[in-house]
Image (cartoon, rainbow, N blue to C red; front, side):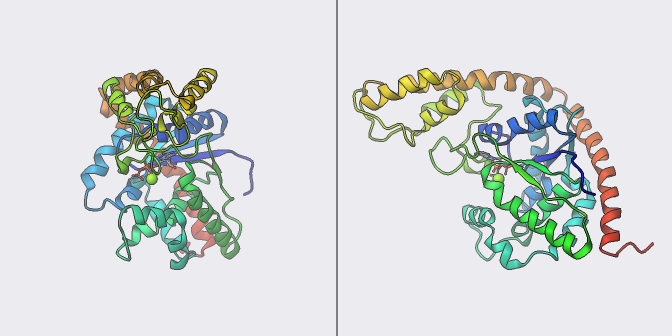
Length: 335
Ligand code: ATP
Ligand code: MG
């Protein structure tokens, strides 16, 4: 069982188009890993998206194409990365059911990611059971294809920890079957939203999207949170917690000039509009080629769905093999 094969897996919930947080938090690592690992998977997590969108299946369905387009536009290459749809691999659901027995309710409620997201979504005790248990289904997403490298943002680290607990428990009960998995963090593990609060999130209305037009980028940057005390150009300004500088630090290649601008801003004499205009150009340079490639790909949605269909077939073959092994281990291989 133990092997040195590098198998990468990541995914997105089809709950909206992807934003800069996805790009720096996960997509850049996905791109690197699709070249460096032996196998690479990309999953559209529609079943996970339904755990808190069960009343809105149209939203989930429509966004399957959107997240696939975003990833393809960024350079995910279907020849190197198997792109598939979670719901179309029933073996993942079967594996989830078996894993459900290995985790307690108390442990699920303690998961800091789930706790945070439950608060954010206003669930109390009325949380859908499927949502509370999504880390278990995520373990099945990761393990059905024996992947071991998982590019994620910081918010997902507690989920990966829980996956590894499931690996240990499964192996100790039923024999060595799965390997521990490793989260792969990028340089920017959590990109703040344009409002300066929390993380940029599809469901939080504080994002700059990889499909945004120049006008949309400009409008968003112009409304960005800076330093509320920096009212007149000559006032000394704060660069800590100032979203424009946070973004310049991450996205502007000219670090030296950014440092000089920071010094000037701190002393006073540099207006918000100047740094915002600079940021607009920096982001436009990054987003323009992605947006243009996306527009091109969006002209042929059938072709994109075919990529997902082919990838799903391939992933399913692997899932079937894993389940033969799993059923044998759990002693439910009757016929
Ligand atoms: P939702 O609000 O529906 O949960 P989301 O914006 O959190 O959407 P996901 O599809 O849940 O997006 O996340 C996909 C991947 O992108 C995950 O690995 C997650 O950690 C990462 N990610 C999402 N937002 C950020 C962010 N602001 N900074 C860094 N990584 C992020
Ligand atoms: Mg999320």
